[in-house]
Image (cartoon, rainbow, N blue to C red):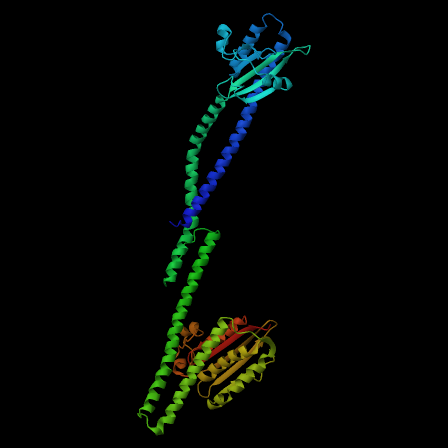
Length: 475
């Protein structure tokens, strides 16, 4: 069975609906027209019957009655295009307006007698029928009848007026022909417009279907043209935005895999080389402990890398529950700095700003902010030159607080600043040279700050300083 496209289904559905509605309109109009014309025809016949019966009621005893009535019926029948005949009380035709009767006072109607059933019905009320008048007529007629009652209340006969129904049928035929001839062009034009509109509505959906199939095969190059401001246009724009997001996601996925592969390949190669050297005796026993420490450090670095990626995945997927509580951010900063005491003393670094830092109560997840501040502090200590300075500051108002940490040292090149918070980015020489770095620390800081509704920023001058900062709401 052939599967219809959405365009064909939609166009056929609209066309059928239009044709059904058009048919209903034609039927209703035909019914109303028929009712109106039938009513008008019966009223016309009724006027003829009333006029003739009024005259007959007063002049039926006149010896010229029959001829006078004939002439009157003849004139009225020619004006109204109908047949008028008058009968006596027994139903015998006295006169008829047809041309045959005018020749020898005999016609097809006059040889017949009107049935008692019709006479009784006409006597009770004015007669009205669309039919053959007990087969008096060969075809259907509009028939109207009236009893002739004298001034003294005597029934002196009946008058009937009939008009062929074929005239109405011919009128309908002419009307339909005229309607069909005049309507065919607008209908064709309407179908053409419906076709164009349907095509414009369905085309974006068809393009989306083709683009989705291409995306399933890995091709993200297709975009949908936005041709309107309605729901279809909005859907097209949303589809394009989704495609762009998928492209970015695919690019991030590939970069992520490449970066992870690179980050894991180096320590695995180092570990494999040293272990093989110890096993096959290339590294003598006196140096094995030294190389085993290197292997241990590489394993720990791999562990930190994997743990960092897991934490990031949980944060980005919303799986990490945000446990907010009120705490003093100043105390958190002091705790983080004190945890770096040994490295600070080893690098002979000077810490500035802790003493003048004011207490700042915030409502946030303490553990997550501790991780963010720790990463910033770890970076500052790691990349400060020997004997250099690390300074911290904390400022706040009624709604937000800003924490900054600044260190002297090589700084970050200006071209690397926009990329410094990207995952696995280690563009500057200082960061690349440090084997303890996983390239995830600053990205983790940005992610934590973002889920708290804040922002992170960096400033740096090469060979002078680097300053990182976070701005977060107090509540």
